Amino acid sequence: MFVFAYSICSEIPKTLQFSKPTNIKTFSSIQPPHYFSSTSIRFSIRTRVPFSARIFLCHAKSGTNESLNIQVLSPTLLEDPHIVYLMEHGMTIDQVRTIMRRFPAFSRYSLEGKIKPLVEFFLEFGVPKEQILIILTKRPRLCALSLSKNIKPTVKFLESLGVDKKQWAKAIYRFPALLTYSRQKINESVDFLHELGISDESIGRILTRFPNIVGCSVEDNLRPTATYFRSLGVDVGALLLRCPQIIGLSIEANIKPVTEFFLEKGYTLEEIGTMISRCAMLYAYSLTETMVPKWDYFMTMDYPKSELVKFPYYFGYSLEQRIKPRYARMKSSGRRLALNRLLSPSSSNFEKVLKMKNKGIAG
Image (cartoon, rainbow, N blue to C red; front, side, top):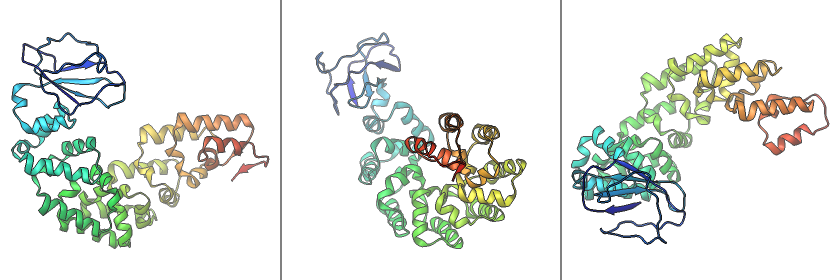
């Protein structure tokens, strides 16, 4: 990031684009006025700019060819240390405004006592700086919590439940609100998972992979969803270990429409239960954008419908980049492969499978 400061003049565009060379130097701060030699930085102005601009904040990754995003700040914004601090760490003015709009109290919190310690806390956990900015944009209320009385005790409690310390950065990024819940709320989710017969160790893995489960209501969401899957003959505990995010889906918006889709295609509830047990992500796919187009193509592939019960992962492969090219290659070779042997091997192994001399379906 670069900071260029100049004196103020008349109207200036909000955002300007500058071309950036690959060997550009980086600076954490620059005292005005600062001049760059032609050997250290070269750029071409794509927009006419009065050259008495107030201040520019430029964001670009060092060592890349991407454009610098130059933003102009007003004197009012420059007077707010919170805004300057966030933008010095790479946040755009639009992101800052989003935080201020969603959580007006943000500007009243101590920069030294609240915001900086929280950022440093996340950095210690291994959260990349760019993700910290997203976390603060998603959940600015984190800055209202006490680091010593709220956040750190919550982290310690979750670790006692088995949350992987090495995966904290991912967990916080996926669901920053996790750090805002009380022990009582967290225990409600844990008790429900115990009801499903899930071990303490496995609960830790579920909380690590899908921390959003803590934000779901047990009675309004988790229990009804578990009951629905049981009606299909699915082992819900085993299902959550493979794909914990499935429990957070809406029954009416996501789950029932997929079940009805397969029922309309002639599958039994038992077969659907087998399919979801093998590939829980079926219920996470879009019906119109994923399921229907791939089903329509499957009906041209000369496979029995039972192949999808055996290999429901079919719906997870790209139609244009994997399914169609593989099927066309198989047809041109004169061979016939089971659906899983058609799609699951790597490109090199797929060619080896086609060269096998045995006839019939390769199982």
